[in-house]
Amino acid sequence: MNSTNNIVPQLGLVCITASDKVRYRALTRKRLLQLAPEEQVRVLRELYTDNSIRLNAAIAFCNFHNIRLYRVTSALFPFADEPVGEAVLSEFTDKLQKTGATATELGIRIVIHPDQFVVLSSDKPEVIENSIKILSTHARILDMLGLARSPWTVMEIHGGKSDRAERLINVIRNLPEGIRSRLALENDEYAYSASEILEICRATGVPMVFDAHHHVIHEKLDSYDHPSVAEMLAAARTTWPFPEWQLVHISNGCESFNDPHHSDLIAVMPSSYYNAPWIEVEAKLKEQAIEKLRAEWLSEKQLSKA
Image (tube, rainbow, N blue to C red; front, side):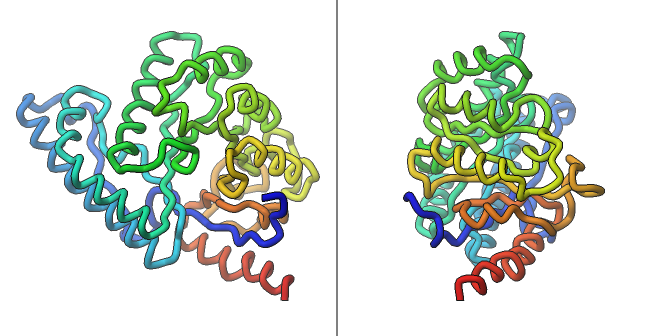
C-alpha cells in the first residue's frame, strides 16, 4: 500500500466502555492469598468464567457499534501467570477458542497492551524475567483465542527504562516466538522518543505503534500538525509487515495540550491521522469519544472527498 488516500481509519475501543456495557471483574493479590488453596481455585474459576462471558459481551458490543478494533484488558484473567491461575485457565480452552473464532468471523481485530510491570530494558534480570513471564501468559491467552502469531494481534509495550536501547534490542531478539511474533513498541512521553523507538523497531524487526500525544509531549510541541507528526507516522508505517496493519494511538491532554493525563473526549486530531488505518482512542469516555470522532472528524474527511 503506497497510497493512503483511500483509508477510512478504524477507531478502536480500549478495554471498557464509559457505560456499564463492558466491564470486568478484578481480584487483588491480598484477597487471593487470604484464601485456602482449594478456595483460590474456586474463586479464580468463577472469576475466569465471568470475565470470559464479559469478553464475549465486549466483542458483541463492538460488533453492534461497528467497532472493528478492540484492546482487551491485560487484567482479563488475573494470576494466570501463577501456577494456580495457569491450571484454572487450561479449563477454558474450548470457550476461548470459540470466542476468538467469533471475533475473527466478525472482523474484529484484537490487541493487548500489557501493564507497566513489563520492562524488558530493566537493569534487574529478575524484572526482565518477570516481564517475559507476563508476556508469555498474554501470548498463551491469544493462542487459546486462536489469534494469529503476527502483528495483526499485537502486544504493545513501552521501551521501559531509558538509555537502555542496546539491552532492549538484545532481549527482544531472544524472546520466544509466541511473544516476539506479536510484539510492538510504543513511544512514550519521557523515556523513549518516537525516533528512538523507531530505531529500536528497525533493529529488532518489530512494528512501531506511534502515539502522537506522547510525541508532542516529549518534543514539547504545540500542535499535532507539526511536520514531525506526519513524518513519524509515515516512518512508523515502514516497520509494519503490511502497511494496512499500522496501529497508532491518540489521546488529548486533560487540562492543557501537553497534559499527559487523558481528556474525556478527543477534540483535536492530527490531520495526518486520516492516513492511519487503525487508531486506538485513549479517552476517558471511551465509546462516546469514538462516536464524536465519527460524527465530526471522519465526516470532515468524507466531506472533503465529496
